[in-house]
Image (cartoon, rainbow, N blue to C red; front, side, top):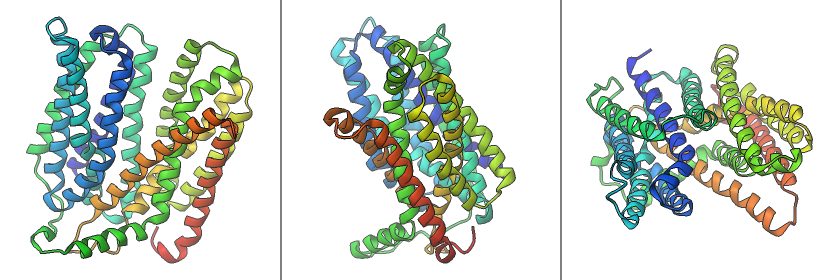
Length: 406
């Protein structure tokens, strides 16, 4: 296995870790700097909006400019983003509140503009380094790295004596070192024809994007609906726990943190098992994952005690482990991908759009449901899980013609 593959994995793990550091320290940042939480969340929203548009741009650019150049640029952007956050603590007594707010918004703008390159370009780099028969295995390990990163956030919540400022300082320095390591690393990926030297008309460019979307429509839909489910889970579960278990908001927050931690750990375990058991076969992953999400969601929505909640989390973790690597591997397949053209970045950029839209749709559906009281929130969650099952069956049925080699 190429050594650079581990460097690519390390980038996705770091991205996930650093994001969770930010999300779990929002109350601490607000308390220490005097910037109200609403401003911090608004800045995060602005960065996420920019992120959703820039991710596909950088992913497609990496097909032409090279993975490590674009990836190091993205990691450098994350370093700038976190150095701006670190400066809030370093110069807390000298900066005015207005300057602090500007720094927070600048931090998230840099995140949206540059850090959006990290995940899709890292994934494309991983695919470049490995033969097609091992793409699913590589993307499964990539997903494991993302889950490892997500474990850090809940740990910071549950371990209350953490020096958050020190964590932010360390994150800034580590991302800078990693950015430099990627930039200085030598590439051993295949050389591809640089199509940027050709005069490509807008109509032809649009046609290529349309072809990419048509080739991967069902995997992209699965990615979008699955991340909608995750978005619903993140935005709704805390409130659901408080309601059905009759516990306080603080108790619900702690339990939710424990659930995210356990969900991530179980996902890593099941992903490692899937590599051994299923190898490069995506069909059983999608089938088992989609069935488990329906069963787990139904159990969660009818649960009235903690034991049944934890059983449902165990079952749902199977789907969070098996489904994402499968739809990423299927999305990356392309008839364009020949000796002259590398489109891994562009195809994974489409998955990035699906992820961004999915989170927005999921949170929006729950917000509308809570606001209008037309449907129970539990009904919305179960409905989304059945859509995932339906798309999964369509994908498997279509595989006989569309995906000869799984």
